[in-house]
Image (cartoon, rainbow, N blue to C red; front, side, top):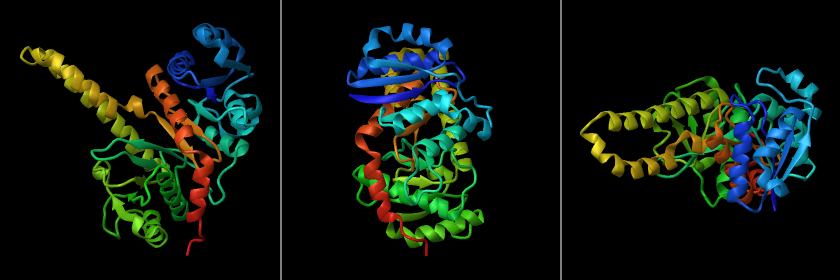
Amino acid sequence: MLTIAVDAMGGDLGPRVAFRACKALLRSQPDVRILLPLEPDQQALAKKILAKFSDRIEIIGCSGHIRMSDSPKSALKQAGTSTMGVALSLHADGRADGVLSIGNTGALLMLAMKYIGTFSGIDRPALATQLPTRNKPVLMMDLGANIGMSPEDLLQLGRLASAWCMIGGEPHPTIGLLNIGTEPGKGPEVVRRAGELFSTELASGYRGFIEGDHLFDGRLDAVICDGYSGNIALKTTEGLIEWLLSMMGNELRQSLALRWFIPMWKATMRRIDRQVSPARHGGAMLLGIAGHVAKTHGKSDERTFRYALEYLVRQIRTRDFRSLESAFSEYNTPVS
């Protein structure tokens, strides 16, 4: 039985969407068990929604939760009694195989480092997820955990991405650095210096700078950037996809001529949705943490939260963090 701890507090839509997503996961995966740290005023609702699966749900009482507006100092102060802190401590103690949180990203990073720790050689764990492309999924990180990063920090992420791809079955992963141009002299000094380190330390695996309009070409296994650039790129992509899907649907409904094609287009739209819908890629792993910790958007609805849960379960089953740490250690050589 695989057990995950879920921090359902702090999202824009309230914990109800998380409870329903947990219900859907338990229905589809009978070998999964969920631990739910909750404040007293949310426990009755959780029990009601999850009543059918009471044998695979354990509700753990907490006195509060970390809010999106809380400062790092405030988050640390209430760590031991907050839903996020309790969820992470359950993983650290071995009672849970992984954690998913919808809460404050900065607090999640800080508390994960406090309770679980990082790989040797990792100074700044990063949020990472796979995005669909025209050829193969690309791992992208950081997506918002670290706003500013040094060249050495970016190199650590390059090594970590290479290790992640290798334990997933890619023996020779290809890595790129997100930049505003592909020429060696383009971009901020931090990125230029990181490119030099990548060329030396990752050798043939490094394929140079990549611009935003080539993210979805499908020729790379991973793209590395700081959390500021990565978060903007991710959310811009999500907004564009949502608009395009909405626009295509509106065009079909508003045109008398095109309405005849709606039955045929529905199947096509379902296939497109399965590949590119932002809801299906709303979960990101906090890589570099010595455990399985995932984050979903604060604005996640029930569907997005469910896919994030499924993503966490899939990562636990296919990419054990111990194997990742071992593979990463092979790349963890001093920067020359």
